[in-house]
Amino acid sequence: MEQEFINFNKVGIIGCGFVGAASAFSLMQSGLFTEMVLIDSDQARAEGEALDISHGVPFAKPMKIYAGDYDNIKDAGLLIITAGANQKPGETRLDLVKKNISIFKSIIPEITKRDFKGILLIVANPVDILTSVAIKLSGYAPNRVFGSGTVLDTARLKYNLGQHLDVDSRSVHAFIIGEHGDSEIAAWSCANVSGIKLDKFCEMRGHFNHQEATKRIAEEVKNSAYEIISRKKATYYGIAMSVKRICEAIVRNEKSILPISSLMNGEYGISGVALSMPAIVNRQGVETHVPLQLNEEEVAALKKSADTLKKILEENEI
Image 1 (cartoon, rainbow, N blue to C red):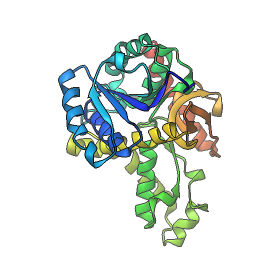
Image 2: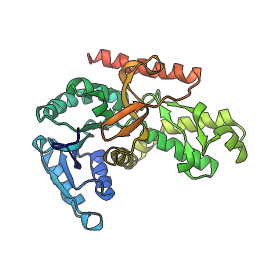
Image 3: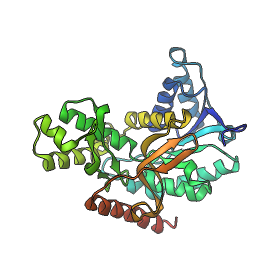
Image 4: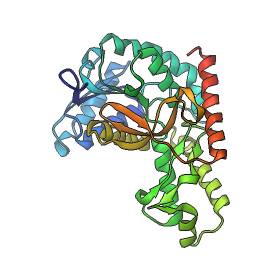
């Protein structure tokens, strides 16, 4: 599919708020792309961000960065949507539903009009809901449309576990699954540190109150965004790094396993809704979901999370 009309050296970002700008800056530093177009309803904002970020190019790798419009995205290999209302202190991600579905109803048709053939990466929140919305509104094959999911939540989990165990977080293997939000699940039953079961590794490091510790860490991860928003009004650096990681997997055709948000097709008895689950990600998008060995309690929580999202989609006639 990437032959002739899809340029995986080119990326478009729709939305130049905190998340969009931070993602653009992260991608400029990555060297993954040679061309980046920024699109925003506030053209002057897009122009300002493009100019500011482009001044860092001499310290990175050659790259053309500019503000444009939807006509500039047709041949892009990857299009990232960060546009949407910001989560305010006291709000949940799901509180953003109506506002951001309305925004997507104006954005997605503009993309499909241009016969865009690349990968559509949804980053705006609530990401699982908006991924479902984007799949339906675009009519694109579900493998081409997916969200950033719980890639950031999973990184937060690994970081917190690394701190708890005094070990490199890159050696921690664990996932947050389900909704990127209040009903997310820490999949403790399959968590490990370099192949060693988590409980055993904890005991190696002098920690024995497993239930208390896992509950505390899961809550810290779930509430991370609220904590950051209460202090600085927005989160953007962590998600920008997550966007870069996902882009690496796509552009480099890595076949990396990442907990992105994609359409469920009967896994764990769940269908018809996008949910954040581990999947193999490559240049075609989502290759396949990767099954986790979850216990009964985790599967029940996952189904409950999916039911919450389905209800919201039905309420909004999606």
